[in-house]
Length: 585
Picture 1: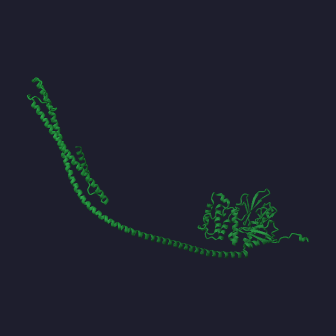
Picture 2: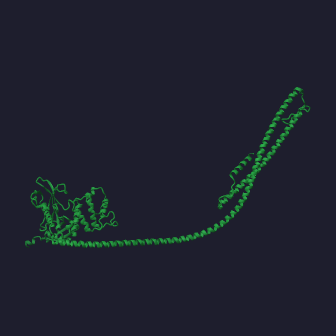
Picture 3: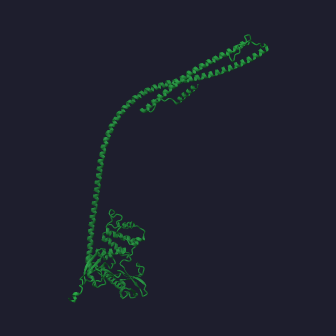
C-alpha cells in the first residue's frame, strides 16, 4: 500500500448557513470557493442586485469581521464549525435611502436591519419618534387599519418599541398600543414598500444611523475616544457620547487614510489643517476600520459620478416596476372599493331583507292580533248588546220604580204636611199648656198664700179667744169634750159667741183644700193625656223618619241619590226640645 493511500481523504465541499434578516439558508460550498463566490450565491438566492451595500459577517473571538471577496473562504479566519454561520447584513449605508435604494428587496432588508438596531438601542431614538416608526412598521406588516379586524390587543405579540422607552414611562402595553394605533390609523392607503421607505426616511435622520463605532485612543496617554465611520465620513466622539461628535472629517475633506500597525493617520485635503492620528490596539479591528473607510469612501465617490449602465437599467426597471405596482395597487384599490361597495350593498340588501322579514313577521303578528281583536270585539259587542238589553230592562224597571217613588213621595209630602200641621197644633197646645201651667202655678201660689194667711188669722183668733175667755169667764171643766175634727179645727161650746166664727173658718179651709185637690187631679189627668199624645206623636215621627231613610236608600241604589223630601233640621230640633219639655212636665 502506498503512502498516498494512507493519507486522509480531504472533503471537496463544506456546509455554510447564512442568516438574513428574515430567513435562514444553508449551502454546500466547494473548498476552492472564494468569498465572492459564496456572496454571489447568496445574492442570487435572495434576488439582490444592489450587492455593494451588503456583506457576509461572522464572529471571531467576540469581534465582528466581514468575509473578504477575493480570498478563499476556508483560508480566512472563519469559525471552524459545521456549518459555518454567516450573517447577511448591510455593511454600508446610503446617504439618501429614497434615491439610492432601487430594489424593493434591498429596501426591505435595510428596513428590517435598521428596525432591529432601533429596538436593540444600537440606534438611539426619542420616544415620540419610536412611536411614529412603530406605526409605519405596523402599516408595513398589517396593511390598512380596520377597526373591525384589528381589535384591541392585536399588537400584543409584536415588538415595536425599545425596552428603554417602555421602562422610561409608567404606561401599560394597552396604552402604548393605543398611541401606536392612533398613528397607524392615519397611514391608510400606504403600501408595504412605501411604509418601509417612510420608516427609513425617518431613521436616516437619527444621529446614530449607519455609524460603526470603534474604541480608540488619541495619544499614548490612552485618552479614551470613539471613532465613528459612516457614509458621510469619520467622526470622533467622547467616551460616553455617541450622538454629538467632537470632530468630524467628511470624505470630501480627507486626502488620505493610512495606518501602520496600531496607528491611524487622517490627512486632510487642506494641507494647512493638522493631521489627526489615533491608535487602536487590535489588529483585526484596525483592518475592519480600514475596510469600512475604503468602502464608504468608494461609495461616496460613486454617488458623485454618473450611474453605470447596470444601475441605470436597475433604476429604469425599478421605476417601471413601481409604476406597474402602482397601477396594480390602483386597480386593487378600485376593486377593493367596488368590493366594499358591493359588500355594503349586500349588507344593505340583507339588512333590508331582514327588515322586510321583520316587517312581514310583525304584519302577520298584527294580523293575528287584529283577528283576535276582532273576535274579542265581536264578543264584547254581543256582551254589550246583552248588557244594553239588560240595562233597558233595568231602566224600565227604574222608571216604574221612579214613578212609584214619585207617587210615594207625593204621599210622603202630604203626610209630612199633615205631620207638620199636627206638630204646629202640638206646639200651640204645648204653648197653651205652658201658659195654663204657669197660670195654675200662680193660682196655687196665691191659694197657698191665702191658706197661710188664713192659718195665721186662725191662730191669732184662737189666741185672742183664749185671752178673752180667761179674763171674762172663769174656766170650768167640761165633761169630756169631743175631739177636734182636724188638726187645724177647735170646736167651742155652742154657747160661746166665737164658735161660729171658728167653725166658719174650718169649713172654708176644707172647701178650699178640696178645690185645690180637685184641680190638682184634673191637671194631672190633663198632663197624662198630653203625655200620651206626645208619645204617639213621637212614635209617628220615628216611623216617618225610618220610612224616609229607607226611601233615601232605595233612591241611592236606583241612581236617585237626592231624597224627595228632607225635613228642616231646625224644626226637628224644636220638636225634640218640645218633646223633652213635655216629658219633664
